[in-house]
Image (cartoon, rainbow, N blue to C red; front, side):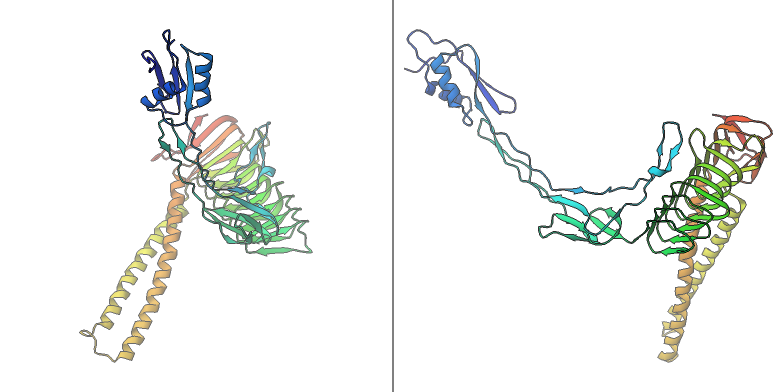
Length: 461
């Protein structure tokens, strides 16, 4: 005789991964069996993951009026996508750290990272396929397929037979972007650069681990990093220049960078950067920055010299109590406007010449206009084509410079000079073509020129 299941309950979790039963006390003469419970589960849709040992326990120990888990699904195991472990930084440290005293630690900077042959660069971990799950209603829970990453391409490294290990085969700088890795040329000097060596001219990055002595010369098509002190030398880089211990130029030194210049201090040096110039102290130097001059930290100071940037200039102190003449200048000078006007005229002239030359070529080739022999026509077309290419090269060059100047003018629209602490008498403030001389000590101020204004205004920070 079938047992009376009135009052029994089958509870299935929301995700259908577990089911329990609640059995009422059977009436006198009835006996609950394993078959009764499994049949009840099937009636409620539970047909997979049944735990028969728990059902047998209910029957044997007469566990009634209590929820007992009697079925569990098989959990799905997620697939693991393939991934790389890189044994180098995939980004560059472009900014120094701030010390607890508020000064800036330029020795913490590293714009490049170098490797040697045999160095491990990357390890690839292949994907791992997961496994599908099954709920108590016997429904499959499918896992997503595992994805592999593309193999890294590039130069300066070798790949293991299984394709999972990448090692450097040459010395140089590591560059990585979007599965492309290159070990580029890097020149490292692990001692002082003195007059015995004299000159370093390298297509790539240059790292000097020692000092750079007076009278030496460095030129690099990428960045230059000097771990030691720099004396009256010339350093030219198309990328960034990092001087971790600063520069004492003695009035005979030059720094020229196509990117940014970072230094602990700069003294008696001519400095030009297309980007920013950042230091803790700038003393009696001539500074020109295409973007900003940033002298940060509690003791950050600009004392003496002519210091110019297109955009924002920021320093803790300007000038000194001895009232040494210190020029702080920001904004767009008349020279930029004149150059912009000249380049615009050149661009228009080149465009007109290109249009005219193309028309002349078409006329020479048009049989309806010219009946000259083919060799004569070819000679004329070749001559006109050379002129056309010359004008196109000129236009490309002019438009590139024109864009650079327009970008500079945009930066200059945000021109301002901020002094977080003290501006001493003897400091001259220039913004665009306007200037003012500071007669008395000022503190915590910003100098700026509102659009359309003919004067420099001062605002307390």
